[in-house]
Image: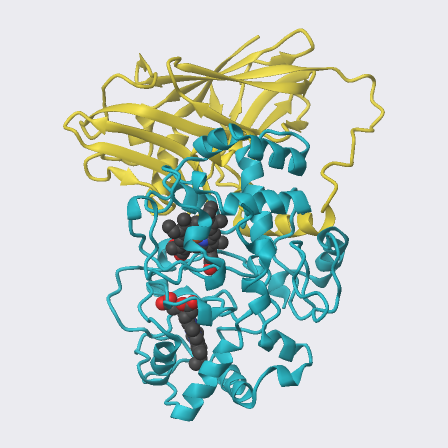
Length: 266
Length: 343
């Protein structure tokens, strides 16, 4: 059971710019100065696991993948399926929102259909909803050499047209046609914003985090929707999409539909 | 001026950026220090060194990397092979760049200077940060054709890099972030501000000959609306009316706007006399041809204030313009031993 609340292509470019400018004005040498100094009754923390179980229709999806048929009747298989899950936010039963710091995770589907992300240092409590973005916010796209999941060595970065690749899917159609989908784009100014933000409420379920309880938020990612979630994407008609633009935005709308929230596993 | 950021940001940066000796009088400080400086007659820089505080050891690491052929797949091509100091850090040998296996690029290697003032890089402005800029040549199949993983891996096996990284970062492991940031530091200190033109701007009128001063007047009248002073570019994207096959969409590749077809970043003209050939595709081989173009062959597609047919200069005016462009050559910059191959 899941409920999808809203869809917003977040964080516009000008906001990013404003944020960038003010950052460079204020915090030039000091990375972090405000420690958590609110005197609270000894807060405790735990871990929340966010699980993405990849399927194609009814079958498990691993990479390299089996051959599947898409909505255009094409038989396709994948040898790469990577995407960024970023800016995770968790909403408590009381409506308060906790945001993960440095919230950048790169999901690379491999031999396991399920990929788990451990969110550490989550304040103990009862959580009712999750939000995350597929892609990398505009500020990080324009902030220079990054590290960790955002390291450009992950080859999820376009250097000639600076910006992150939000999702990279590569493979072939059985007739021999290779496909390369490198989807990204963060600018509203030229209509290339492909950031997709997802929001799921847990319905009647609650995810209870404590120092000794690590709930799992189980999401299902149906890769079939990559081709047909919003508009049909034909591998033979459009085998290569490797830059920001209208096609990339269309495909991002497709893959938005891949994600669904399934259940909480306490 | 506010496109470069506020003066207050500049003030905040000053204590950090003025690493090592540096005098506010450019006359006295003929760039002998490989450190970031703010020339008195320049606007505030774009690059704020956030998270990449400039130090001499990091500049030194960046310089070592800039001259390092191991940045390429087969260890044959370094940044400096396409950006030669005596050519104002351009490639004066080739119209289109030559990379590994002598593969041909599609564009002319531009001269490099004052890069900390660039809001975007490349002829089409597609690269938007000095730190991520270097990823493009390293990974481009017709340039260095290498991956960041492999470069870092290769260099971490070299004791000389271990030592240089230790000096720069207090740990001896090179990461892709450290490599990119160190390269950015070296590029940021490539400041060209000691040409006769600069000395003239700073009050030494005799630094320019009478002809050069007349050329500057023409330049201010006809050219400076794009090649804005003192950086000699406003970093906008323009068509300068050069005829020829349009097989490079230029800025349109990035903006996706049809009206940007064939528009290119207005190039920085510092050390231009040393950096032939000219234009994004290297079509013009010397500065006389460039001046003849602006004088006689400007095509109908050109952006204002370039008018169809050109400015129709007299031979004397052509010579004055040429002399002025020569006055943009910064000997101290192209001969600065601190910018040369460290090995």
